Length: 201
Image (tube, rainbow, N blue to C red; front, side):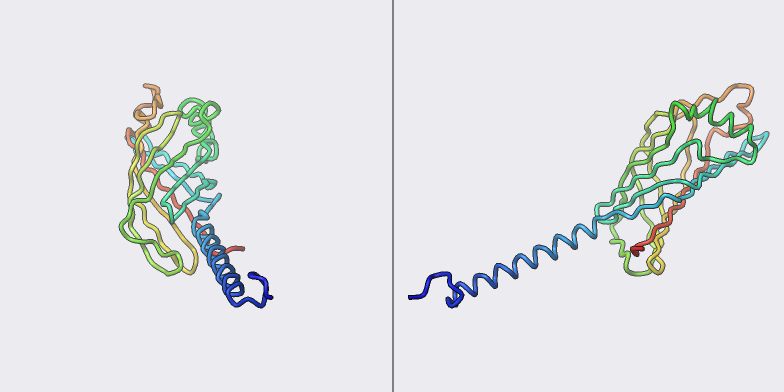
């Protein structure tokens, strides 16, 4: 007599084969989902700002901007330390950190938001996409709603995301002393460029 689940039982063999196939498909699906949701990360993004005022123009660059973008979920996080902004004028940089931004008390600026687009972004193919980015921008300890257009370019596995927007110091409780109020614009032009690689090193 043959046992119901012996290797000689065709039904038993069929059930085992089906179970193996189901498990294999499940593993492949899980692996694919996890891989797709793994965000692209950079620690060498560039953020610059430019202030045009009657008495002088002011500009600074931060080339240590960190960011993570999940193109599956549409999540975006961008963070930069205020003290990493560099100026041509060392005294201006000191005033920026100590008197205006209070970088010891409020060390970072952070944006958290979503990519808004009706078009799927295919990172495996070269292309350019114009998207909206919407979320919250925290500067000087104050969070404000923020929305801007971003251009995303895919070239040979390299992804570049670039956006420009206007930030107003008054919106973030940044006080400008009366004596230098004509030196600093009410609206600051900010540009952020992020470069990612989709290939694993």
